[in-house]
Image (cartoon, rainbow, N blue to C red):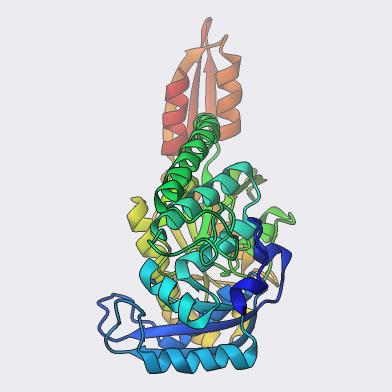
Length: 436
């Protein structure tokens, strides 16, 4: 049998073990779909191809299919199904990627028609996340998202020879065919993973609480996947955090302490990249990780201005930030227009005239980095107040803290107290008062 029988019947991630499987990518352009997403279908297809190649699948053919009225059972009409079946046979295709949401019934029926594995957009992104997760929390979050997604795929009369079971992949794998047993096994596994994940999250939340006690401002990098966040992170921190030209190269939040030009310590964090139509399962699973952004004193939004749909990508990122409840204002938000090394000088000059409040830079070459650092320092230290405080002379810990986290203007001793006049940010002033 073609397609499914060619794929290994283990529960391991088949993509990890078998690179370059022949793949066909389809973007269904559904005309009747009510959506705020006005992206050009070709841009959507290009992104789907990039997502597919991100896990080393070999894209042999791609196509935009216009669907005026989606079929409940098969999404598309019989003629289109037959055309694709011919392509699958001629090109020896193993996997078909449908760049959109496909119901379990539609997936089952299309797999039967084409005799290959079908992945929708959610399953594809979950595969990528499964391949990228490194930390214990990241791995557990992906496993939980995969199981929740897999549970929605349970359909009667769809045997495990046609639908894999297992928490690490959506491709291949035989097993039992009883729907009730499937659901119970998945539910049991979800409970186990949630318990393990809660312990990990509890530990990380303790670390977050400890960080809040420190005086150091937190600066978070956000942006669409592959916008260049990790490259910028490396430029600022002089580190070698993973920075590749691939989608979702970063999944787990990375943090570093750095010194500003005024010798102030800040914490810089690199976070998971966002994407359009991010699956609900992943938003929920990674919500605890994304909550790191909520603690940030300053948000740096890294944009790739070399891509055609850069404005659409910006909107997607802003929408996710709003969904998380993070308010972006002039005092806590910097927008960086990255990858100017990939666009024409004319476009750069246009941006300079029309987007004067934005930082134009190349994280690859370092151009514009010095201006960004100055702006970070300026915004972190904005709204500093003069503050006078009397403290016991014996509180050497407070005195040391004040010298590290403010500019001491003057000091006056008496027998038991020390009066210090300082210039300090509102954030650090509140932290100081909490220590008294």
